Length: 285
Length: 288
Ligand SMILES: Nc1ncnc2c1ncn2[C@@H]1O[C@H](COP(=O)(O)OP(=O)(O)OP(=O)(O)O)[C@@H](O)[C@H]1O
Ligand SMILES: [Mg+2]
Image 1 (spheres, each protein chain N blue to C red):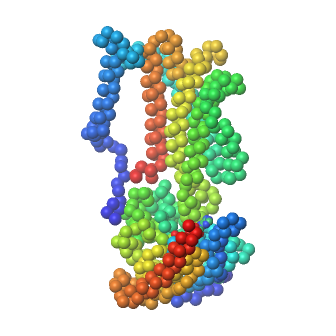
Image 2 (cartoon, rainbow over the protein chains, first blue to last red; image 1 turned 90 degrees about the horizontal axis):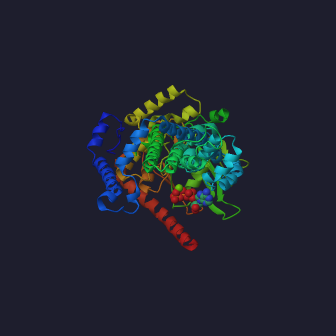
Image 3 (spheres, rainbow over the protein chains, first blue to last red; image 1 turned 90 degrees about the vertical axis):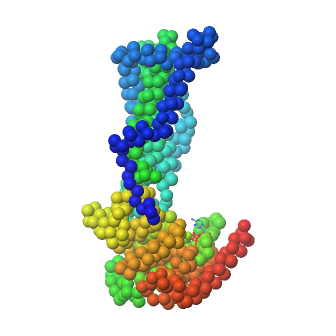
């Protein structure tokens, strides 16, 4: 019984120092630097080797990407793309959470509802969100709504499946213990099922968020600038990439790709942080 | 309800006024239309209020089934079970209502991982609406302090050792002021040193608060050391094969383990249990 009480690990000023002395931190930095150097050298192969290396020789070198980035960095249209993509992701994702979590819980709690809803759900689920794009454009009044809908689908299924699975995997002993201490149905829902599925909700949300970004980018590329259909719709980081491709600016394509990488990372790390905050008991193991 | 309870205010021979369990001719058949596994067969057992009743028997014989029937997690097929003269389950009522008068402590523990130990202990009275949150936490704090668990209050169950977890769980059960504690191999996963600490702490708790204890175990030494009686079950379907009175006076401490009487009782139990274990093994061979 030596390890009776462990101390909570608190984030604080000590964490930065720990990171700076951490071997893994330096390994990661070294890895990234080596990657960038290889990329730079490979991308400039035509200049120093006389011929372009296959594949990498056609990619713009990081220095050129950085240069292109610095020019768009001060342009409002670049930031507008960020804003538009973020707006769609957040709208779709929020809707997916608001609808998916209650639906998943209802399917987990009520056998009748599960019997009614699950088959339909399972038939619709394998349809990839992008397959919905044409239909969505037809039956949603604006293109913006169509994109948000497709984005929503990306996260929705994952969230529902995770909530149902999470609720099913709650140990039956917790229910029995709660019953044996006099809990009624509402207590069990609030005090056992909700906290019990909390980790799965965040897991589903994190995975769903990843899918959301994939979907939004593709949908933006497909729907184009929006000028042909509905006025202000269109744009976004996906369209930014597509537009750079059409304009022949390979540097900006890479800028768009990296931007999406950063945006996706920001979103999923926000979810992870929220998850850690909302499930403090999971922090400790 | 209270009328029945009040009738029986004479303390039992263990000095308790509630928690008498009567199991009468109980049968339990799982899946009667299909595989029809008979787990309990015509089981009759009378447990006076405040007794520590230890139940041993071969693996898979039906001990947990019996406990679940008392707890109200499963139905019985026939027979009846009463608590202090009141019907828990029986004719016309196949399954007992789970309730805080019979709190279960599970083999691998069932502290809610998402609640701190203090919140776990305070759980029962809060959901029952018996106490305000503040009162419940206050009582939980004092019970935990009494049990030497004050230091673990703010920790989550995942942060403390399994021995401490088990003690917290027993305190959580006692917080409900139950008439009966139903323990299903609560100390199985513990090492023997921790186990002996658990035993002392359980007895100490029991001496302060005479609840009936229905305690399933595979550990014969544990059974004899703790129990007033040891019920040795037959191989499946289970029913008491032999009931051993442990005539070593309570309060007991670890010196009891080395007494000659203890060894004699061990031998006696071992023989009976071994016989059933062999039967269970042979039955398993046939089925396999
Ligand atoms: N829900 C169930 N459905 C069908 N059969 C079951 C069910 N639960 C238990 N059984 C069977 O009933 C028998 C008794 O099981 P039980 O869990 O009561 O035994 P046990 O004495 O507690 O065993 P152990 O010592 O291993 O815990 C076993 O053969 C088991 O396979
Ligand atoms: Mg068992």
